[in-house]
Length: 374
Image 1 (tube, rainbow, N blue to C red):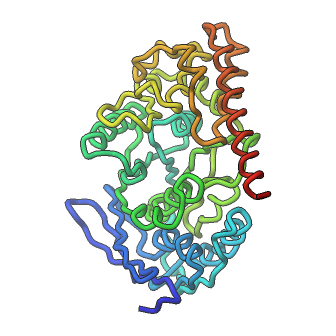
Image 2: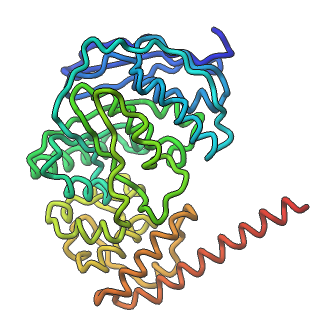
Image 3: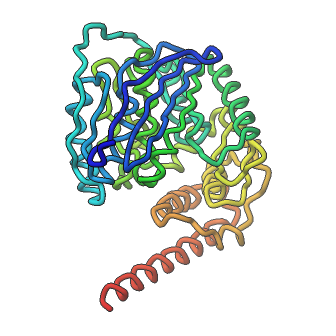
């Protein structure tokens, strides 16, 4: 094995239990990862595009040439330079590297009018689905997106999302992948890779779509270098499928108010990363509490059946928001509650929470600066 390069073997394709499978070996730093995608519905791409997406950031992290066996979309192959330029400016630890692959001659480009959207059952994906429900033909669920799902939890989540798809009269495509076995060794999933995982699956399904929506995480007011971004996600497009980062025009509280008008959303909404045994949200973690505050501001919390707890102002005041960037979600909730008749004493509690977390952030910054000075 050549230790100075990262290599992607020519993809192999098969059918397993009726699912369409694409697999490839990705060799990096003396280790080989058997990366696999399984799609419940075909056709799937024959080229190496999904595996190029999976391997680019790990190759940049180790600073080795990336060599791709199998054909690649000329448009995507050319775009890897811009993608690398952006990631290197945002995160200098990812070095710019040569990418070598055979450009597809595009003799048989499959074209379709179908439009898809990734769907997880959360606020962002419900917002995109409701916004474009007349345009979207199919929704896409990824298994392997959340690594902590047990087989039992996956089954429960899948059952509900299948029902949501039926309620909206949209076919559901399910995709299984183990891409994170590779990416998590070299990238932070949220900060670096989440959009790339989505687009790698979209590239797999390229023969089925002309456009796929990627639900936005952040509004235009709070864009920053992140794993999914309106500047980067569309760059993974090919001659046959385009990716559109959707929903930056609304903040999370505004999205929640919009989806609160849908009974389907209120009986199916799942945002929790802590509830391991049940589809319902735990109602205690910071993501649950943030969503509950937005639902409360919209006057819809009691109608959302996936939350079984009431908001406690004392719990809100003590909330640990996790990632410092999450504080803007709380400020959006505060504004929504201040403009609502449904605040139930939560405004003061939320102000305390925001002040406490800003103080902690300021103290951390001072400690870091002091450490650099020493």
